[in-house]
Length: 392
Image (tube, rainbow, N blue to C red; front, side, top):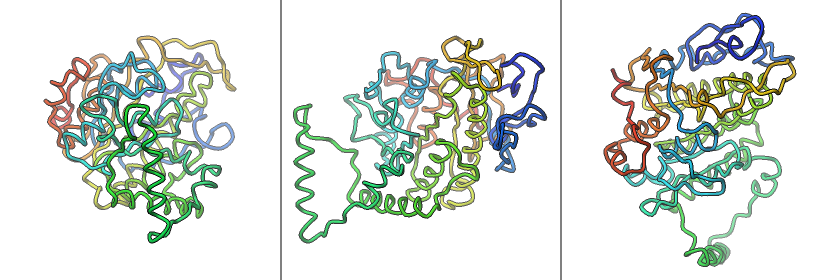
């Protein structure tokens, strides 16, 4: 957040500079360029946005994470709560932002999307909780495009059979019902998100189009697309353009490389910024219904340790894990309508907000009374909405 590039992280001569210049306002480094493209990362990726998100909206430079881990951190964002007992291969125990929006905001299934970069780490299980008052009927449609459109997957799914409605479709629905009902041994017939028949048909048409566009190389990818995060963002743009949903959670994971590869870490940070810049630019210039009517909240799940581990990368730079108090230090950038530009909320020496606030803020922006969530007993203590401060 301090834009100190290699100043604090590595020994030797300091190289200050901002490598995330779509989101954050600041001058790029003049030396030691290793985060771009080409041999050694010598070519920084061109800035997409004419104005940084920070200058268009608000920056919260010192926010408190609720977890020192990526999986726990993502869960805390989605649930707005501490999730110390949330294990892998488990549904969230407390309601998620998706469920709050659908139950209390009245949104339909195709209004709410969760786009993840892959299916590892039990990510597909996070689109709804097992909470008795919420659950699957209030969940989000989940989409992992780098898996769905992987060549091996495309071989089986891309040319799926189309059943004739007069004599073939009814038996297939009967088979589906039989398979769904086999879940009775686990507590009842398989429940569903509640996509209507019209929504299901729209999703089918969307998937057909995506296979076609993938084959033709016409997916709305960022100008540079050389890692999974960037491909994920390209498909997320397609979801937004087709469904124009009320809410989308987009999960990027490339920066987790820092455990053993600091060079790869700064490259992934640079690409995450490129991805977010492309996403915002696409919304404003390619989706008229969403331009000027969309709020973007960018926030990490956790930070990094104050001290490095013993692993050196190809440049001899030290790697960093995330387990100490410093890894609970994160930031957030928020841009959209009714947010005062160049708004700085808090400082490095005066923390403001927690990661759980992002969930409550999104819920309030989309019409959910924050009091309902705050009095539910499900949120982390001290959670607050940023709507007021963002407009001050």
